[in-house]
Image (cartoon, rainbow, N blue to C red; front, side):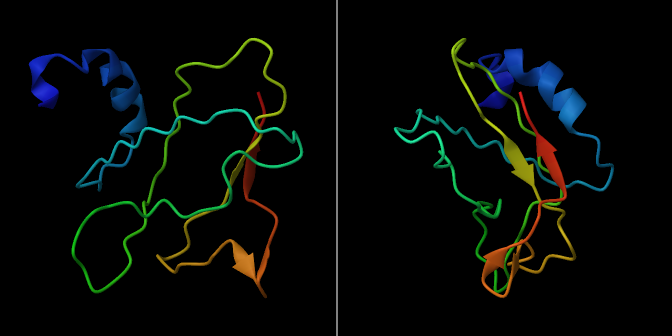
Length: 109
């Protein structure tokens, strides 16, 4: 249970991340990303944040996504995070004619 204090260390992040007054759910995904052999190959490919486990006839996409890096190796190189705007819940917004279009934002360490 989240209320047993086991995850209390996450509360400052969750308080900052929960900026959407219309949000009715909060999903926490953990992603452990090992380094790649090829520095030009992304460790995590382009994807939709659609891991909400609800039985629904439609695809559910996250309206807001927050990222928290808990641990970053001192010798890490690269690590650019590319972001695309959620546009009305349609899947494939990052793709045009089968190609990934330019992201709406980039975060570089």
